[in-house]
Each structure stands twice: as structure tokens, then as C-alpha cells.
Image 1 (cartoon, rainbow, N blue to C red):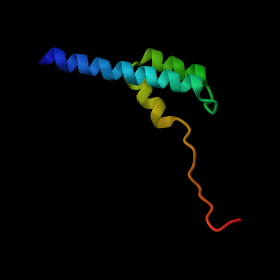
Image 2 (cartoon, rainbow, N blue to C red; image 1 turned 30 degrees about the vertical axis):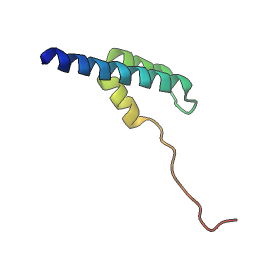
Image 3 (cartoon, rainbow, N blue to C red; image 1 turned 120 degrees about the vertical axis):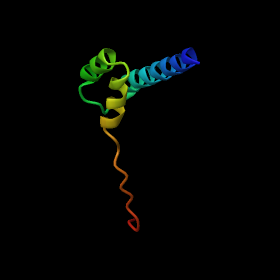
Length: 67
């Protein structure tokens, strides 16, 4: 039981870690890529969470009725 929980946790951490690093590599809008890579490498669980919470999101500004 406990090993299943640990394996699930490790799998999720590795997936989030990989997702964050590939997102940094392929996104052009991020400033300080080296800083974010360092944070993710130093803090494998908390780093990706902080990255996805603080990354630059595109604003959704629809302009209805304009031609």
C-alpha cells in the first residue's frame, strides 16, 4: 500500500518535472529561462508548481463588434 503511494507520487513528480522543463524549452515568451530551470532543478516538487503558477499567461481579450 505504501509503496503504491510512493510510486504514484514519484511518477507524478517526474511527469510534472518533465512537462515544466519542456515547456520552458519551447516557449519563447518566458523571461529568465535559466532562473526557472535552476528553480525546477533545485526543487523538483515545488519548482514546477511555482513555474506554472507564475508563468506569463496570455490575456483573453475578445473584441466583439469590431470590423
